[in-house]
Amino acid sequence: MLQPDVTKRIGCMKNGTADIKEHAWFEGFSWQDCYDRKTLGPFPVQMRNEEDTSAFDDYSGERLPKGKPLKDHEAAKFEAEYPFF
Image (cartoon, rainbow, N blue to C red; front, side, top):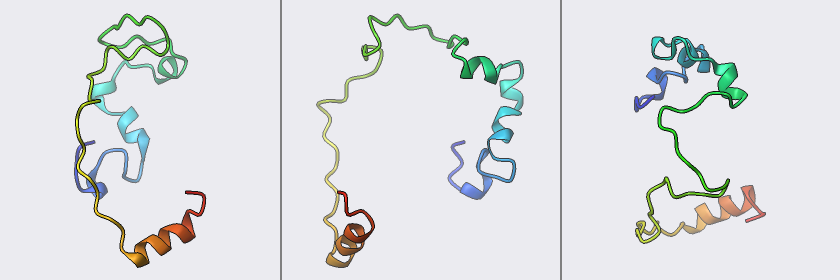
C-alpha cells in the first residue's frame, strides 16, 4: 500500500480492494465482522466517550508549512470549478 507507483500499488490494480482482502496477511480476518463492528483491534483503547481523542498524539502546536499562493489563472480555474468555496 505504500508503493509510490500507483500502477503497482495493491488495491489500485485490476482487482481493486479484492487484492487487499485476499492477501495472506488478512487470512482468517472477517471483513463482515469488521463492517459490523464486531472485531476488536489489536490494541484495545479505553475511551471516556465517543469524542475522546486522548489516544492520539497532540499536534496542535505543530506549525505546518505555508502553501504557495495560487497564480491568477489557477485561482480562476479553482473558482470556476468550486464556486462554493
